[in-house]
Image (cartoon, rainbow, N blue to C red):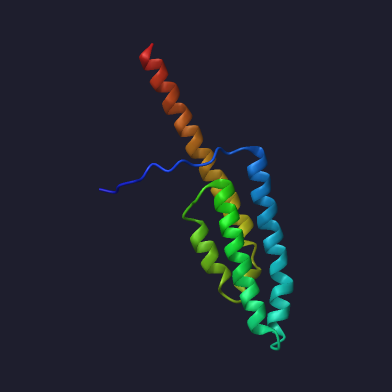
Length: 120
């Protein structure tokens, strides 16, 4: 049996969704110059450190805006693979998390509506 803790997720508002998408798009765009610096060889280590730091910041901000979702962890790991970090994984992850959270909210609303109908 899987035990789940009841974690209070932030309410999905238009502002939170737009901010999460903005952060993810900016992070995905910033990956290009960071990778260019890393590819030169001279600044490879500082570039990799900046890349990991950027990914950590994005994961924390996205979690704060949308609530924690397990899809954030594979996205973070994919960003650590050279070459794969040029794929817009953060933007895709945010889109997936928003989609799943909206599904969960719709399910919760329908369950609540069914419960209210039964109590009448």
